[in-house]
Length: 245
Length: 172
Image 1: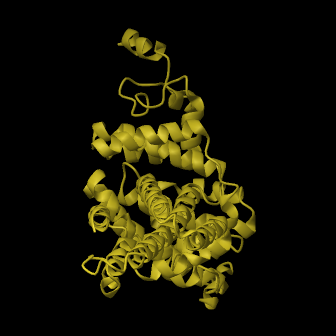
Image 2: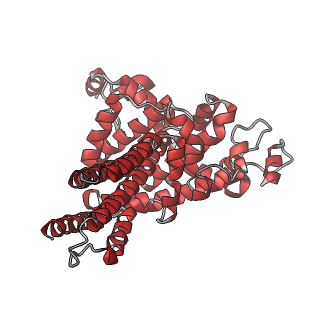
Image 3: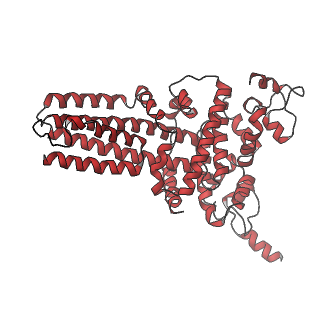
């Protein structure tokens, strides 16, 4: 993959995937060249071009600092492929599926905690052991929101296929749409992981071995991602209509 | 003919035609979804997707699905404008992390329930016939492992099993 970097030379190297797709000369300052290597770049760029348009993506990238552009391209490609697979909902259907799973898991956790409380009440005679178990659980709760807590959850991902946990949403969601989401998400994640390997050459990180490319860079960014209430309201209305379809 | 043309021109243009400074025809693809009083809605979609791309995408969809397509595009465009690097993927990543945390919490809570139940069964050594006697304590564990797959149907069945086991325990 290192050799593809030389492709940016004006007129002397092979064009990047974008310029190959657009059938134009790849200039030395081509904004797409660093992110669309020739081997796979043309196919990935085709999706981006159809959904967003080359000039729009060029403008979007110009507004992003250079050190963030690689991840911007990855997310733009992800959204473009999602939009092509599902022209009505795009990647918003993935957000719906994940939101439903979060709600389901939250209800499960609450039920289990209620059972724990019930058991501890009935076992009140053994105060020492109850106290120990309560302390252990509270300690875990304090750490569950920390990066260590997130890292602790990693082993569970090994026991199930990625996105397999979305299955509980099947009874309450449009099956065809979710099936599209599964296949689309699976292929997108693979693409993202490949891109990350190409550009970052880092297999490390807490989530690196999960193959969940998105987790690597995003924990830090998560705090700055905010969605205003009007957008959430619109999203919920869209979710309701999506379920009816 | 001129009069009808003027009448069409006299109608107030939709937000899309207003931004693009063009005449809003009666069969304008955008007008049902981008009313004139929501200019920012179309501005963001135009900036991220481009008007011609949106036009093409909408033309390829049945009319009854275009409203939802526009809503999801508006959401994605707003997310991309707010966060040019991560766009919608930021929300997806955040939700995935929530799921990881909740799954860990659920697994820990389930292990705690098994632990408490085993202890309760050992507190009644005289009831040898109890289904949860120490010799069969492995059975609840094997059942508890399954819910970690987070299959909704199975998880509900497991809850029912727990309830029945609880009743049986009390009846001993």
